[in-house]
Length: 51
Image (cartoon, rainbow, N blue to C red; front, side, top):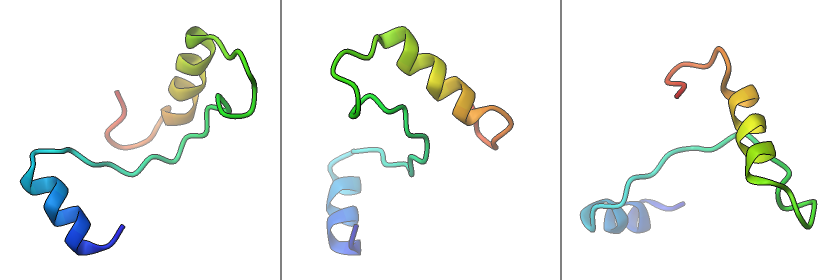
């Protein structure tokens, strides 16, 4: 994302973060919300700023 777009979004009050956990919800047609949540939690374990 280039700085002008990032600045415009921030000015409008949008919050941005870098996402590096792939839940694979894009890969499977019917991934359940609980499976996605589980994959996110597994992916962030031990990382700074985890939920």
